Length: 508
Ligand SMILES: [Zn+2]
Image (tube, rainbow, N blue to C red):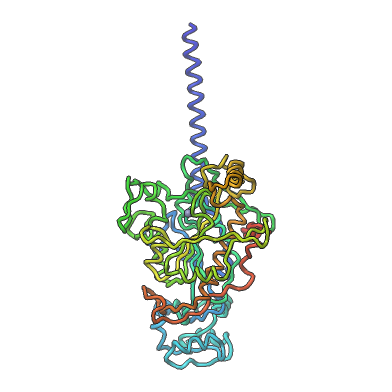
């Protein structure tokens, strides 16, 4: 009788445990599915962001998939553009297709001067931007030359909207692609790209921003790390913005099976875990693995748009050697030199306003393949940079994983101890002390601005192309400077002083 009772109790206990496991399993699965499908919101200023390209326009198999992310385009307000009738847009997307057409422009405008060098036929002079618009709309002239700001304002104000901006490049200007979200466990890269997307205005040149490069890697978290899934930041008005903390690699749901060895197109062999790391998959391949398909978006986009500069934003653990550092492709060495001459340093305002944190740099190793600063530099005309800041939540010495750890809004006692140990024993266990998220974002935003300044100083020439690859600086044309509208991108000090949340816009 006693035996029966014991058996019964064991049965009840086992059933209870199994039921509990089932409940926990179901709740976790539902939450995880919610996490996978959660779309981080970014504010798109309609008056500033012109086009939004989908990744699938540049790597076709991604269409409609989780990785079909966005590339936001911010045109310089002074850029010279051609407007044409909407129904002719497809035919008039190349400069050679519109060169022989009847053209009108505003007398004395810098855009008229820029277009004079391109159009072989006479440009008919009109008094105002509105006259140019109306004449193209009525069909009197086939092409109108305007500044981007004039064109977009007139198009947006027109109810009928039968005129649009052609893709034809009338005046070649420099451009920059800022990449955030390469590794979703490195939050300051995404946040810096978001700050630029939601604040920057461009006067001359074109800025392209990616806030989520590997959206598949944002759809799950790194196994065995026990990471927090979301983190939150308060905007200036006290509203909450939610961001995801994902994984370093593409989700296995999207790319499976994983081979034991990943052989890169260069022949380089890496361990299987790297087969889903997008920063080992460049130049990418439209027909390759899922990760290679995403990497191909960058290479293909940079070539198609003839992008001048590419910046890939990262973070690393404080004990990692390449920290608070710049890695550049050898073609970008002159820009880096100019950045150094201009005194580019990370400052440490907490310690002393005059104290500067030295900014080490490495030229991209020639035989290390698959990284942006190697392959995008080799396979395109762009000058490519990668920056790293110090992120405790990626580290192996950290304590409990919390939202505070991601933001480093409270010190981690293990990192604090090791930093102190290094100071006392003159050792280098830590290469870059972990800092708060606002300071990490500040470092990235400063790097972004400094690359532009460095580029403007070298006055490099570029071959004017619509597509394809040409030699840089060899018989090319000087395309002038890239100019941001002053005060639109927050400064290093302001980002630290007011916090990154202050520069995130409210979601409507
Ligand atoms: Zn990274």
